[in-house]
Length: 222
Length: 222
Image (cartoon, rainbow over all chains, first blue to last red; front, side, top):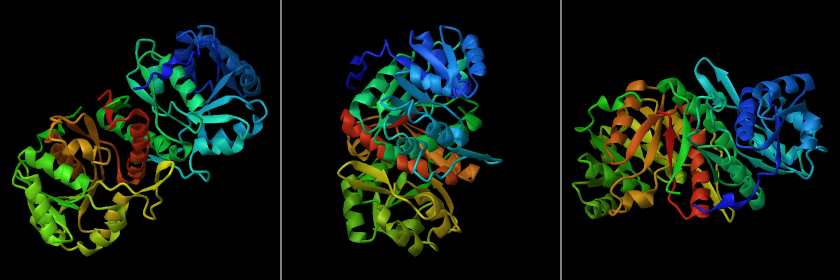
């Protein structure tokens, strides 16, 4: 596998929108643990500050707009039903930045999880439409929030599929992924192929149910 | 992981529709190598017989209808553009059998592969609609035909995601998968979640381009 980890991301400030949710807190915790400067965002600055204090490791909490402004790279970890409204409101603050969408548009019923249809094709493509002045990538769809948040888990055992149109941006996101112990970023195509990556989370939920696991994926032969 | 390999499939005859294509020949070769009785089907019985002779290991070749009739479990490995017509014609011959759909509806352009829209949701769901008297499952989407066909490759390094509504059928398919050296069958949900599994092949094609690989996937934590 090519050494995309040569990109130095250690000085970048990483924002996490929806940083008080499980996935957001988990990613913030792991990135901060790796020495990254992390800012979590929430609609409510006080909630963000409280969640940041609970995570520790120097994580700061701000409202979403201030979080976006303060960050070089911004991970979008908001719930799907707030995705469009949140990004629409932050178009200015996210201009010129690398955005990493990790949102999985899923529905749930008694048979488990299933993929929702998205007019733009995927959450990542919706982000690209709503944020024309940002460089949108997609990653972190499949990593278990439970494992991310568990301090007993010293190393995650998962590859992170990284998608995007811009090679510099996907290289940077792959390098950011590699900061987290046990994770490897793998380039996995353009945003037009993001839908199935997001939707695959429904299959991993089925795997988790059947095998009582926190499943992740590894790509072989690279 | 549960021991679904307890299901004894060693005496079953496995048919492979589209058995003269790369994926079909590769699966037929590996299953025959594992001691399974294998029959490949083609529209043209003479072509099927010739391909079977080339594969060796006792593989037989018949026309698609005779292949379906002769088999206990039938893998559908036809090109996507022949999927609907082939299955429509074989409804009677496939009645009462377990069908394993491994077809990936993909389009290709200069930017690579992308998922095609399927009216029924996925190739597997289309098979379920067209074959109401069969038990339809889906599997073998991601395993590289190049590796399957390479006699120098003694063991594949890939999990096979197995989908379906019927637990006995998915258990049986998982046991069949486990017959092939290096493969492990993992239950990964119902057919309504087959689309993204089929479409993920487009991402693996992007991985293969970027890393000069024959990528597969492994599920972690099971």
